[in-house]
Image (cartoon, rainbow, N blue to C red):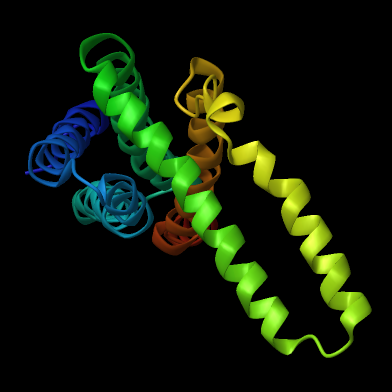
Length: 199
């Protein structure tokens, strides 16, 4: 059965929220931020690509002629609807329903940055030979450390409306690129053949 693009978008939204709440209820501990990152990097792109593929393929199966515009919109619209509804819902939940989860994510985000800085510093220190270079590295490292002090990170918030807008803008690029690929792949060339035959 061919579902409408908006219906598929709602399905993607529901699936995204199920994944979000599974992570929230079962993994909101010391690795919550890392697990969220992995979900955003691996699980959701596969889910949305699969939804877009299903949308285009089901339309392609029902129509002899599929233009690039048709294939593009059949791929893009479900992802856009699912994505924008998910972004709004997750933003509202973290900023108005469970602000403790937001604080935890912000804290773990800063801690991850600190860990990455420490790892880079230790790795670089091991390979440097000259004392001058080591002293320079130590100086830069010490200059960065105050940015991780409790006072410096007190107002740090990576889950504001502007940040969510930036995330969605980046996600939109993924949607557009994927939709262009599906549009080019699924468009039929019989449009031109039929035109020639009619002439």
